[in-house]
Image (tube, rainbow, N blue to C red; front, side, top):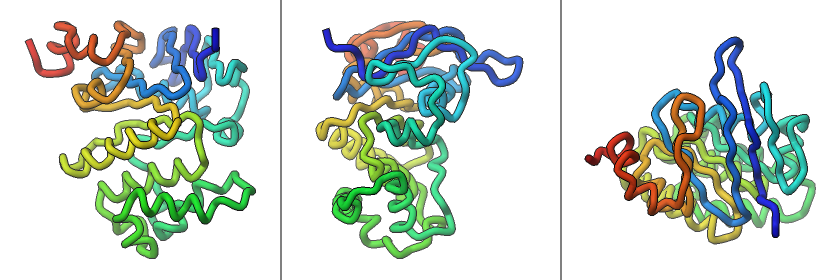
Length: 238
């Protein structure tokens, strides 16, 4: 049996004396789109940051491509194919759109960067129109596209997306999720943290529900959409 691309085993993450993630198990198979949903403060973003290597573990193990990566620093996880699009986008506001995108490829030394940059500008036509514009002057939706494009320039095997729809207009959210679906169809595995639980579960093959630092429920996206408890807590249903 093929091992998962990513596997978290009894993972704990602390902020000082505060336990933010309390022993979760989670896995993703190659090519899946999996979502994490839950209320604010549930530990979702903390989990993504732990996978990306920007937060240390207080316990447990993270395995990627069958190997433990707990001791691997963040830049080496990126080189191994794990890219994070953080909550709040984290773009370089004083650099141009093109310079931001090229920063996504800083760890690469191949001759395909220009070709990948062209593909990214085709994927996001708004960025093509604004490729010489200073990134800090872009709209929120354009900045989110830029953050995703920058991550994709690293040629990830695993894309971690933290709240990509936050604060964006519905039409921009629709475009963002079209791109996420296309990225998934191109073979990139996606772990998505999303405040719009209904939208996330419609797109995802599987989902995990987090509350107070633990996974309380897991299942197929359609199963979680139909679950009465999930609907009452996160989807506005009875």
